Image (cartoon, rainbow over all chains, first blue to last red; front, side):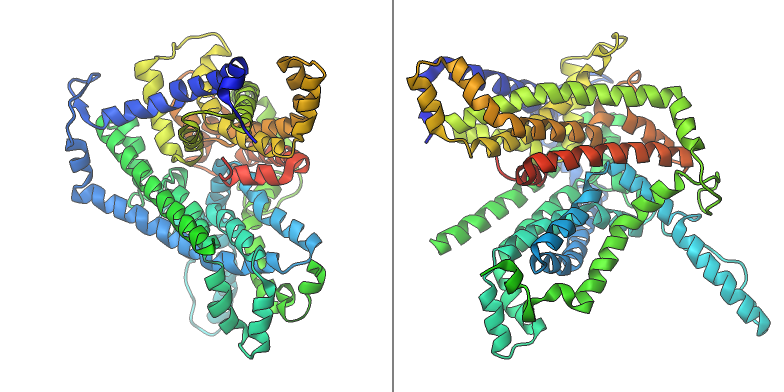
Length: 301
Length: 284
């Protein structure tokens, strides 16, 4: 199908040159510089000497930062799990819906995802804050119940709003909110390819819906589950805005520490090392996915 | 066997009440925050909690806020310029990968996928360092040159997405048309302009809309590449939302929501599956 580049060198050069030059100059070069910085140290306030030291990586492994990396993993993992649990029934509903309903359901899932992340996060702030809609509704019921118990001689006292914002709960709530569509779409793609007669056979042979789900649907949907888990996990672990706006002082994730190194602490080499650690985690996750899908293809062949 | 038939009977999960209840709950979870945000932008109360009647005064306030208008204009300029360049570079990339076989092709494809998978924060700090240390972007530049660093960064992350969409479109091109044109004596340029380009057009339009929305949606990379004298919409909104929830922010957000949703809907109509795939980071 494709032709060798030697057959039309002029055309090849015209379409090869600009994108490659752009990619190298304005993407790979900046990343390479950060990578080099991660092996350097601050020699003065504005100078960074690249000495090939691993001190920054060692620094990142100190308990404080190891704790934050661990917390990021934990947040991203919990987010992924919650998205998987919340997303699976949705993906099943979409798969087995009629053609027309299916298009609408897919649109329903994807629409919030086209809205600016900052705006979605802000919408959650308005919902969760002390004067937010959730606390307002709770306060309303509290007052109602207060009148009732006061009549019985046990006043409830002043309503104290639930602390929903600026804590770890809010970060997980926000991450699930943002990542859910990323989970549903790959799950749907895998379930859609599934041979329905297998499900019918399982049901005909007397297995219940839950048994069929656990022993037929889930094993067959593993590829979709793996890619859903990765496309949810990878952006979650590098999330910056959600912990920044919804989190409290103790919900910092890796990205917030990186930002702090570059914008306030002025320790660029350490920030660079952390960025590359985050990048390596991403690559490892993708390599796992690549190996998993290659393994499946070989077994299928 | 038709899909409609297959989904009736025991596999008719969408009509099972637990699934329906779960769908309703998910829809509520996804939409309630955004719909309340939009609704309260029309609410005639500063407290942003209790409904006091319909008003457009926050939209008037938004349009009267000179900073916000400047920021909005800057963001649209950034989006427009980065879209034009991204479409050109993306189309070239798509043509390159679609037509040619060359040494190092797999490596180039991998490198082109990087902007899609690299965590935003990493790209943000890389661009920050690049534009402060390596190629310091001069401050005090006349508009729109002061936006140059942001525009360049946006192009770097969006042209790969455009390439995926356009390449998806090219896959359905009938190469015999190209050969026929060549046999009839058309030059390379004529073949491209009269035969290939018209076929690419829906992909180019969809790619352009995608690049435009990606640029408008971006916060993190803009946050790291904007200098002290460059005000963009997300940065302005960020500084407003950090500490308070106000109806003005609701109004400004509503405008942006309507704009991006409309643009994406058009893109999907034009080139549905390719755009969806590119957004999910697949396909290169």
